[in-house]
Image (cartoon, rainbow, N blue to C red):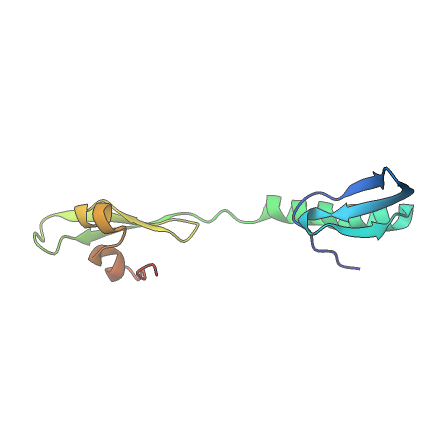
Length: 110
């Protein structure tokens, strides 16, 4: 059985309902508690956490891009591992986008 959740599962007993249930993450999926089901849910959560631990680290990519107005000057453009782009030029400081990022393949944010 596959479960999808983004937080650790917890066992829950409501004040007016003495039966145990467990909750899967922020979706608040209440499921009847059984020792077998709990072991399965915990195993799935542990597998998700272990996969995160062994996921390869994505490095930032850096580019040296010549200035449009002064070809002897270059700007460092960085494509961050989370998908964001940055540039050291003044245009990026004003608009958070510039032609140097565009030259490296970045798209203007909408």
